[in-house]
Amino acid sequence: MGSGAACELARSRLSVGLIDQAPLPNPQGASIDHSKVFRFAYPDPFYVKMAVDSLRLWRELEQETGAQLMTHSGLVLLAKGHGSFETQSYNALRSIDLDAELLDNRAFASRFPQFNADAFAFAVYDPSGLILHADSCVRAMLDLARRLGVSILEGLRIESFSRSTSGRIELRTCGGERFDCAKLLLASGPWTRELIPQLSATLTTTRQEVVYFEPRSEIADKFKPPRFPMFIELSSGFYGFPVHHKGAMKIANHHKGIQVDPYSFDSTVGDDFIDRCRAFFSEVIPALANARVAESRVCIYNNTPDDDFIIDWHPELENVLIATGFSGHGFKFGSVVGRIAGQLLVSGRSSYDIERLRLSRIGGLNEVTK
Image 1: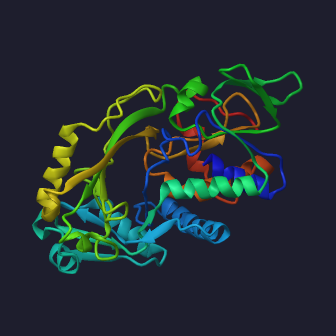
Image 2 (image 1 turned 180 degrees about the horizontal axis):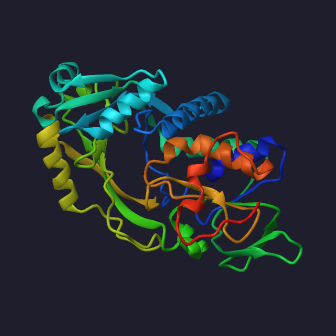
């Protein structure tokens, strides 16, 4: 979100600095992995429309940088029972004339026989589904930001910020360095709770495990896009990707993990989670049940209570904008959130209606009067 906003601001010929506590892309950042899901499929037209704009901006970034940032795969929502999330997503897509298919389990499994038709009741197919190559996306934004003149300062951990006597915003690092600016964007992910104590009771940081499995060589082609789509099965929380990284496909679980300190957490994926992945495969995608583990990692979510984002001004300091709480589904919106933040910082207004993302929806926090 920060690098996207830096690019937007630099295009306006402003003097822009991007500061991070780690080398960029930050290996501990919630936005970093080989892949993230891009989909239009949401039960809420608010996010569907935002995703449409976000995809347009990702494609513009591809053209501007020459980097391959996405791979088309399609995405399927697998529904057990009545599947209200899945049917609402289908209806939201169709309400704004986007392509989507509602398929019974047999019709879907005949198209994608890798799935066990008996494991779900019906499916919603979203042909817009794309694998966003997350690390490449962030690097492309950073490279563009540098070309546009952004000063990128790495390895500097911001300890605090406040209004200076001159009315500007002063930042202080743990090492004693000081910076000041006219306006500040805090896109600090799971570290926001420390920088903004007012949000410490609102935001939670959770530990999420990710595993890359390598299908047997004789069946690997069946699990490459577009023959195999990304999938989300909401009742169990599991979601996954086709083969896309060194011969491996990815699976993770969107249900919130245990709460952790983002500066200190166990980064080893447990055998119990790998066993849960295999149990899911045994039921839903049987050919992957004995696939080899090629890689595993732990990522972190920065969550709001309602899973809606926060994009709003600091409750006490004017000219400090907060973009946080992306709750495990925000990466796909990185391009459009960068634009929204840039608009707000330049003019105080955005062309997007983001009223629902304001702090006023969260009890106990007062808004700054603009």
